[in-house]
Picture 1 (cartoon, helix red, strand yellow):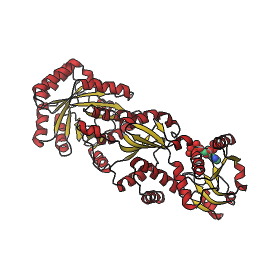
Picture 2: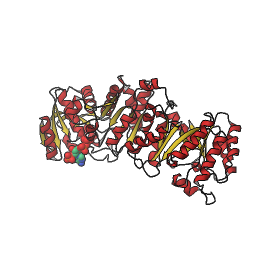
Picture 3: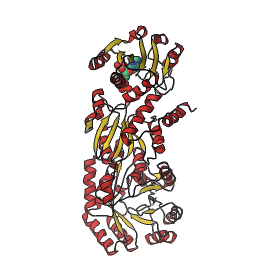
Picture 4: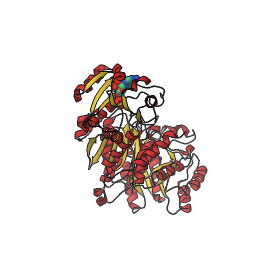
Length: 523
Ligand code: ATR
């Protein structure tokens, strides 16, 4: 449900905004602290006259409660409302039959009880929203939970908790309040303000937030980061317009299964995983979404997965190893490999798995036999680990070539395989040479980890890089007569295996490959 705030500084203008908003809104919030000469009776009756269904929320913030944008936008002639005047105005709103009164938790017990008893006299016609705004930051979840409990104690119709996102993780922390409120059978509005909070504004309705604030147009924003009505509608369309009911019945809560998927990494801006996974989910008829989160604090992000009951997560650079300590279980393969790229949520119990090695093995297997064949692996990082693990599992013989001997030797010792200095690649002979480093990845596509003349001893050359589809390494190898394998198949298979783990269904691998291929070859 969309709530359009009316923040005009003049009553006349506010009436015009109401007229233009009425057909787009489920709620209209009259910001009486900003509408300088606001005539409450006239404004409420203007809404009633134009719509029988649009609900009216009356809000009157103290100057220190209003966001910085509102204060600077408010002309000097908008009078500062005293506490007494504010209470009088809220009481008048109840008398005039407003649907909701928004009162800050900070107003204190006495004021809240006073408004509540007046509302009780209206026989439930006017309801109370108890709100908390933090204009500086997003406190830790434990603190937000305590604030939620404080608000909930008053038994309001809706709790509203709005924080300011200082980094992307804050979105997950505040959004956590929505499932918490649902578990308490309480309606809630929760999201983060600010540019870094856009994600929570977009996602909150789909988790069951009671309503979303949207400005009629950019100039009418009542808080930083607020979407316009048009933007909010586009988001809904993108998400398939399947918002959760604000408050399900207790029985359906008990049945509630985890939903939706996330990617946790940093950076994630250029990730093609959302495109690939969302395409697959749609084709599989699963009405859930995959969203990328740029994470700073992986511990908080994992808290978010639990709190929001997220069904599954992909984990990417740089968290594949650090995430392990925050999970409940690690499956045998991920444990042996030493990295997690997939999280599975099973009734709140989080299990770490790894599909990177499977992605690589499935790609190799399609082209060649792995068993008893030698594979020269370039690199000694997380991807090299996945390659070594997968090849060993299939009975192949991996050997490590790495720029830094110390790191390469360490990995080789761990898996009891041999290590060779980088300079030995040219003279070595093996079934396949596999690059697991990022050398040659877009935008530095003119680079290759080895010289063009180094491919002579290899039947196949594979690059784990999929952007570009044909790296310089592969172009050089092809010229030398080697058969080449791009990283695209590995990327698709590791993603498909994630979907299989999360949903138990076989994903449309060909379609996933097609959509990524199309994106990578689009000019
Ligand atoms: P990932 O987890 O994706 O494998 P990583 O842990 O950063 O990434 O590992 C990257 C690997 O690429 C490392 O083994 C690195 O070699 P060093 O151990 O010598 O650092 C290798 N690598 C990165 N840049 C390289 C380059 N220009 N030439 C050769 N190897 C390189």
